[in-house]
Length: 230
Image (cartoon, rainbow, N blue to C red; front, side, top):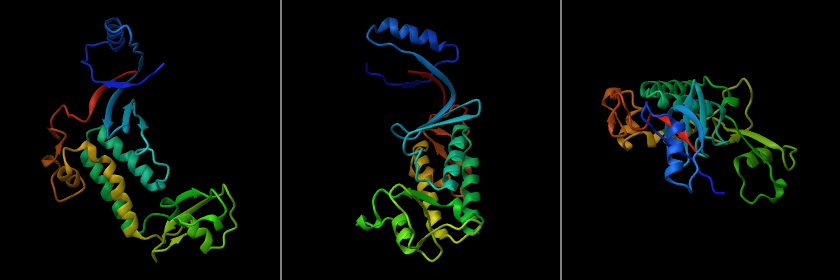
């Protein structure tokens, strides 16, 4: 049996269970089951979206659940999604400026910005030396297949082992990494100009255009009351 899921925005007076039953009656070959209710949803590309209900955040999609994100940027991404779900672009910008300041002023620990990857074969068999392999070779690390290696981009531009309690990272590299995370929010905005403006403190928030609607309009296209029907 093939199954799939859809998310619908229904009028407040519509009971989702009754709606599913009506669809079943109209289409005998389709069976809908009510999977849940979400207060808001942000859809940021094919199969990449975030839902919220009672303060709980549910994230779906490889782009939004990337395992290779640094701990600081994983938290930053989740904070950004919560801001979008709340239609609070001012908070999205505030998160950005705060994290940017922490990076530039070396207020983060190396471990906040580390990435970790596993060794999948003997080091001698690697033809392309990925950052974690470079770190292992440079430090004569005794690692075997399956071992996980953590690394950062150090202030000298080289890949290095992160040191707890120290801030020996390359701020320029991690500012670029944060901007890459920001790109995951782009689909929420009406265009490239408004997307970039969201992170520019020189542009008033009220001037931004989100989807096809002004930010201060009560109903915003990219944030809707969602009724989940699967």
